[in-house]
Length: 269
Image (cartoon, rainbow, N blue to C red):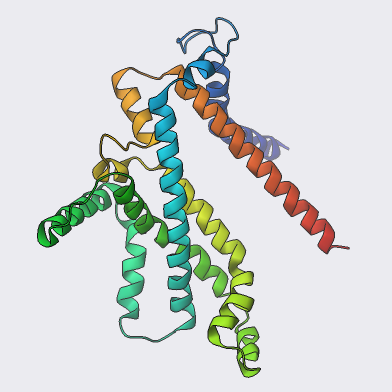
């Protein structure tokens, strides 16, 4: 009985450690004062001021654009890379190819950001290309980071796919591209989607790599939040924005759970 109580207490402590800070952000986003040390009264003041803060809203839009583009390209490139590693067992440079893909998983983000900055500077110097630092360079950097995570997810799913389905389709005259689009891709589509969401979250949340390859005109939301904390402390407008983001994320999780439940209920009939 004591061990059961201990396990419950550990579980409650874990949940409190994860979600109490989020609850505090939500609560203080409705506080009428800037202070985070006490509650004064309920107010929507900070949501009103957030709607007029063009700097934060523009950074949110930049982050959404960068995350969407980088996640999409990372999913496409990562899916084909995973397919090559799983289905083409032997090709020249396979070990090097796999090592290069996995390197962003183990290299610190500071090193990745610095190396990408040096790469862009070298390209600009050697080829005389005028590189516009900002959304394009941040997107390229995040694509590089996201590919590694997509490959890991899609590759694990591809290993579980029964290859006899693909072989049977090719025996019946289907071309390799048709086999991939009509058989393999629908099976691994959930893994591709999971990789897309992970790459999106990594891009939207990144501040280290983006700091190296961005420009003052194209700052992302994490960079704005970090800069605000360093200069003026925690702004209640950030609490309001965080509350909106938490609400949207929670709504998406609820919708996904409802769809999964309905699908499971339909399949069990």
